Image 1 (tube, one colour):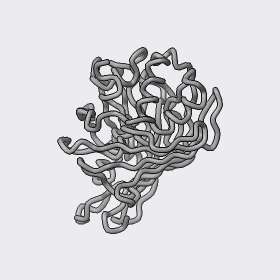
Image 2 (spheres, rainbow, N blue to C red; image 1 turned 45 degrees about the vertical axis):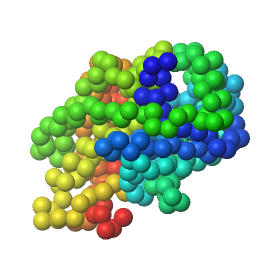
Image 3 (cartoon, rainbow, N blue to C red; image 1 turned 90 degrees about the vertical axis):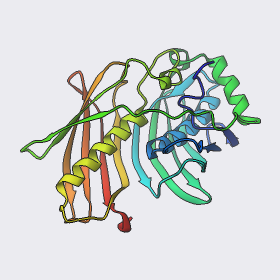
Length: 281
């Protein structure tokens, strides 16, 4: 099976399930990792929603990243912690799934997703339905051995200069090969939307750091994201160009940054990222 269900899978066990309605699950963050970014916490919530949706449609369809109305960040997570995951599906049919979900550690929330919509596509295009169903049975039973996630190297975001228009640009080269492609997905490698989300967050933080007062010493942290859109699949080897622009600023108290992503001359993703000084969150 190789890296399938290990290189980019973030549900160890499904502890409660009503297919098409709701689910709860857990993921142990391996303590050997250096970090576990917030984008992977969002990925874990989305994967739990995917399991609930796929089960409701007999594993003939699977959701892919689409729209997220709002992501709220309540705190960081650390290697060695256990993520408690929960999702509620608002609708689920062969065309799309709509859901909301959250993650917590030790009873304290760390991330919440709302107004999420994922298009449902043919499972056969991405993976073997029988293999996915077998994995689902394992997750609903004893679960998979914790600690299987080996970690990953985030693709480098090459920052450019801030233009007179106020925009900051950056470029990301999607690798031709990476372990996570074996998991996302075996039959059709697709660059994970959550890793694209991470690139947008990093660029927004860099941009906010440049536009806020240089005397501000309090570290900025992510507060929320909104209007997160993924319009197209990104394949191995593609180049993604990012453009960050300031939407609003409250002195040195934080900023909201709009980040757009383009590939082959077309916009493929967008989001608004709000960052605040640490004590204001």
